[in-house]
Length: 204
Image 1 (cartoon, one colour):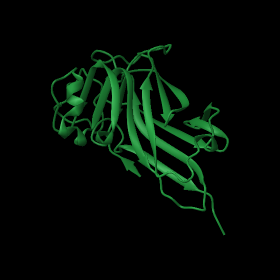
Image 2 (tube, rainbow, N blue to C red):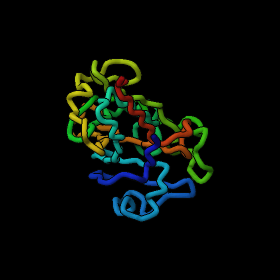
Image 3 (cartoon, helix red, strand yellow):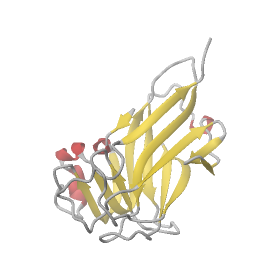
């Protein structure tokens, strides 16, 4: 399942911030009013200093089969003025209001052009991120294959629900408040939006 960047339903962010389509920046830059513009549905890059943004994830009701795991994949990095490959940021993931785990982003990468970054985007700006995979199953929460949190799929109580909400946040009290860039399929190094895979237990 592909979750477009522009499908977010709520946000509470602190500038500097930006939202871009593959054609250009949605103005005004560094102003949260741009995140309300109708063209934001075509967003391919979102960045902000701190705060949170929320994306709905529809759930397939396959009763009586139970949801066994959720895997979420996205390209992200830190955010700072221009870029800095050594700029750390703690990025925390939630489903609904349950905290899953925190990812340590090591930089805001701009030492080269992103493979899919459009030509209008300046060379001195964030260019690409790292592909981050979050998996929640019966054993806990894993980031890129390493256990990162104790929250299990059962702790989320998703059976019978039709939607859950992915919240991506840079907390006010994080050790490294270093912003975030979220890349869509037409920005960065990976030709994808936020990808979600739902796995259900087999039934006879």
